[in-house]
Amino acid sequence: MNGPSMNGSGMSTPVLRVEKLRKSFGDEIVLQDITFSVPEHTATVFIGASGSGKSTLLRCINLLEQVDDGTIKLDGEDISAADVNPDEVRKKLGMVFQAFNLFPHMTVLENIILAPTRVQGIREEEAIAEAFKLLERFGLRDKADQYPDRLSGGQQQRVAIIRSLARNPRLLLLDEITSALDPVLVNEVLSTVRDLKGEGMTMVLATHEMGFAKQVANEVCFLHQGKILEWGPPEVILENPKLSETREFIKRVHDAGRL
Amino acid sequence: MSDNRGRGTGDNSGSAPYDFGGAWQPSEIEVARRIARKKRNRKNALIAALSSLLVLGTLLVVLVTSPGWITLRDTFFKWAYGFEVLPKIILGFGTNATLTLIAGTSVALLGLLIALIRTSRSPALTPFRFLATIYVDVFRGIPMLLVILLVGFGIPALQLKGVTNNVLILGTIAVIITYSAYVAEVIRSGILTVHPSQRAAARSLGLSHIQTLRHVVLPQALKRVTPPLLNDLVALIKDTGLISILGVTDAIRAAQIQTAKSFNYTPYVMAALVFLAVTIPLTRMTDRMLRNSLERQNAQGQA
Image (tube, rainbow over all chains, first blue to last red):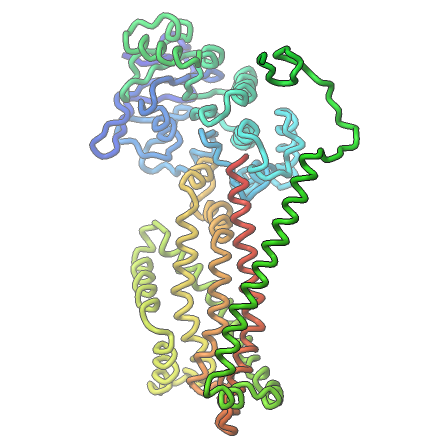
């Protein structure tokens, strides 16, 4: 019982290792016995119904939530230990939210350079140059001086991705980043993530987009009632799952037209 | 008839070449609509004018024909005398203006500090949080006039060494104490309206608690509470007049001195006009800011 990504994935330390994580809110157990690893340059995708604990899991990894039990290791270092400074850990993590969460009172550029200048102490000119490079790469250069409310949802989400990339994170956490988007805007965001994957970014994703999961995932984990019920390569989990719960979930998503 | 939706060519689909260049002329329908709208607007303006004339005219007639009107006019609206004493009242208003400036700045800082303490979660600040809550409860609950009297007459009565007996300074302190309690609550409510997801986003970017407050939470909170704060500023300008009770010569006190000499109340009316000259533009400005911020918020929903 080693959990996902422990079979033959080499000797090197995984970027992320979660072991026997447990989280509850009051009496409600949201996550239990969550164990998995994410090796460098791979993407692990969590699928599961709303309320299955996907978002909570990502928030726990980011230390936005305190776990009840278990450990979380980032590059072998236990970040769930009591004496860890969350601010230091978060410098190595990038997180993108379902609702974008851009800062509405700042322009796109200001959103992007806030953390590099304030947290990492990079000189402003340098941070701006770096931000423009990223904006250029993702086709948003002309939006640099706009405020977020002037952008489409897809553009806002891409800015949010750039904002988290500007700090060169070790690991990117993507929490249902297309769920709040118009169907026609989903693709631009997904292709951005595919590009990142191609460049070797290590990621953990929660998503409802099965087709996308198949494209980027090295491993898919099916979360059901707070547990990882089934895991494996995307072809297996998405097309030929063993458990009836997984089959049922895939079928429901399929019927909703999201495959 | 056949089902001729669309272009009426009998065929259910069609296309027209895009024409972006040509000069646009309003269609007949649009021209007719515009004429109808203009007509309606003229009619509305006429109704508004007539109704205003009727209401204001009635009020004026009632006032002028009332038995005491002549006496009232001579004691409250003796304009020649009013303009004679106006310079003294304006001079007195200088005290109100200075006090507003000093108290306003101090209130902004103290109010912000108290709001920050009350919204903090740091265990080290627990006693301050407790004290701040008591402070706000007490000073929002006491009439300001009482605070002014207690501070203005009470502190000199203590005969403490090194503590001022200057009623102007003591009065200002009383105003600051009271208004800070109000302003702290306005700012606190602004801080609480910033959605938790903004904090989460800032923290997940690695910003510390203080950095999150300074760069993400406060700018949004203060922008939101600017209209109500301006409202409080207008109230502050008026309430500075209350310290005249301590004998400070402000606009109200200056007017009072004049009425005591002449037994004519026109100086009070002049003082009211001086206050209005400052507060009405400020109120208009507040309204405009509120409207703009509402428009911005509504525009956001369409993004």
